[in-house]
Length: 461
Image (cartoon, rainbow, N blue to C red; front, side, top):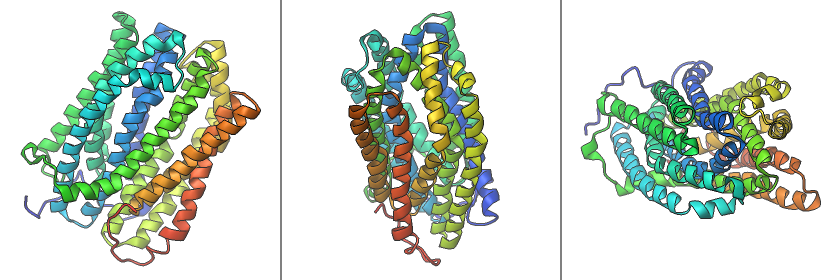
């Protein structure tokens, strides 16, 4: 493939222009995509709770952290690989960008097949890990086994959307997600409200929507004349390129996966309080994801902004982008968190009208919202430090805070006073500890090294 490419309007160069305007322009489609992704994921819970019953909602909620284990792994791999893509794009190194795209997508297909099979086989073990109750077990196992079939599609979509975002095109992934979200909701309603297929119908509808999302984004990559064009005949594993990508993507993937495993053990505590707690807390966690969409999208944007500017040897501009991201997130927490705190009963009622389940959900929301800026700090600094090429450090420090400190708190607090409020506080404690460790690392090890505009080496340390 030749070195020269003509940049089309779908690519967005983040190395020139007003940083605030560019970050908002880039982040807005990601924000809308995450909103739709949450709606896409919430559709199963809303329809299960309203058309099937509280045990079906509990089954979907109990399965959520398990399914997020593999999906989170691929999201992490995509995030880390995106740093490599963005660095090559910023440096105008289109030959290596082309090789990295084809190598990573090929790797994702292979790994997706392996992990989908593993997930189906290990479903009973995973449900035992989270102490799934007997009255929920059969529905949870059925939902989860069907859901795992779609992991391959999730893997391919995550990598492909990561490619587009790395070159500044965050609009097309949003468009495709909007289409598939609508399709998923329609299929959910047909399968459950009309065909009465229960949780199996919910899982099958999700797989259908995931397959459509992959078809749409690959169609774009096959037809484009931009720098991210996909040529199926060139899908292969280039070993040096794969090692470079894995150096940044595997730590991110492992980080997401281990945090998901940690959440399985948190879910185990939740399940001890019964199906009403499972349903209510599952609903509260869905609300948490909606409130966090701005900080999550700005965090993702910070990684791409920083990576492109480091590739262009504009380190000072990279730091300026980080400051802009922190400022936006501060305003976002006030905008989203305050109304959610006061209207918690209203938003929880969307998922369930069961009084006991609602009480659990409202209580959790009102514990998390006053402390939600800790989640924003965690998102922005985790992605920013990964954008600076320090993926391994991010992995270790995030796991120490988000997993180690959270599990230690639960282990001690549950022995002293067995109350569901310990579960509620475990989430902001994990955010706070993870943020503290990564911010200290950034101040001591990252900022001094990148002072001045000099080209850094792409690595994962």
